[in-house]
Length: 390
Image (cartoon, rainbow, N blue to C red; front, side, top):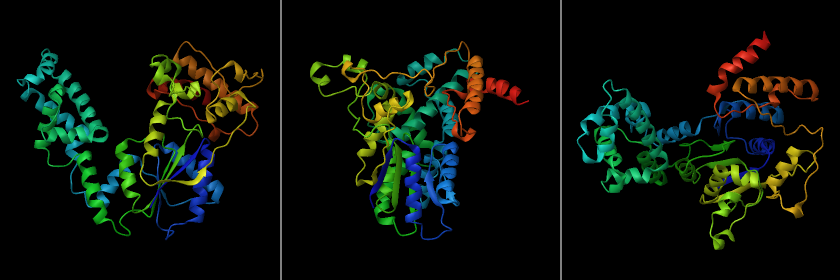
């Protein structure tokens, strides 16, 4: 079966397309859960409400996270007995902490030995073991081929102590790490796949990025079951070649001819989304579900103008494009500069109250507040919003 791709610059359009798919092609049994892979519980709640509004009712949905879903696939193919717990981050941390002193005399561990030379209570060793375990955990997803080479003792000598430590971890562990599990899964799948082994249909919704590890797993499974990817994409144009103006300036003239800035906002801030879209386009047997579901919002407001520029890869600021006049009453994009996190939360609180009081039809479920580091703002949110509620 093909891997079906649905793209739009509006999440509401993707929700409508998913609701139509569920209504037109229901699963064989109403007691079979609809599997929808999401990246957050917030997306799960939003999509559930959107489906209930569009369909009248929504029930029996199963919303796993990507890692949980992949782990479930291993179990469905009978790989659950391959115990990967020794390769969890917590287990590896304690194993690495125990192994580091035993390898201190190895020449490749000279930097580690120097770093831990003034660590009488083992605190630095504990912290370092945690960082190493986290790095190895990322390798199992993003660099499984490199780990396979280390396990066969063909690592690059310039990589120093890491291959030696990884080989020691693998030699004493009883289970398999995710990279080995994926290789085993893909090799067994053609012969082991049978009706009913996997879910009847799997959909991915609201996911902004997945590692190649997950995409390869889903691509392999799509040969047996229906897999749908509902991908939010800011532009209908191909944007794999756009780069920021700063990156263009550093390129050779002949290379610069092959690249474009397109939309400057998208070129500078859309790097991860661009890479993910490129990986999706490389999936074998990829097909478009219902075509492109893009909507041009026009330029009635500043926000709509920004969205339209990204949709059409325009808005470079060139003189021939002209400059959009801004209505003084336009509040679609506002920038507030504050002197502290506390003041930021206070301004946010006042702006939210103002919007709820002045914008007709606006409800709390229409509002999303995003922050790069919630831990920094958590005490201030409690202080400001909690005290106001009282």
